[in-house]
Length: 90
Image (cartoon, rainbow, N blue to C red):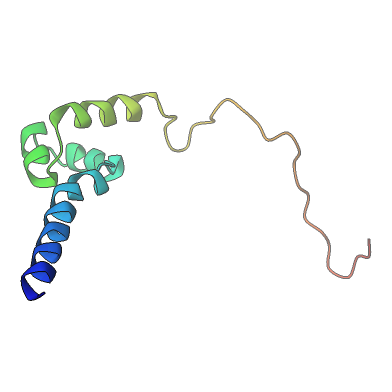
């Protein structure tokens, strides 16, 4: 009984270890771009964050397409909300 329990526990552990890379499959592009701005190489970033250099290039491309901070995005909100005065009833 004890060996069966240990075998099941060991198999479960191996499944979790094998599935770990799929859990952390998302790349945090914000951290990647900050590292690029700090002057780190793509290889250094990929080694540190355990991601591929292709993922780093995708983040760079996405950052280049995104609107810059302080510049208008080109679209205005459909309805502008006006502040409600205190004590005003609806």
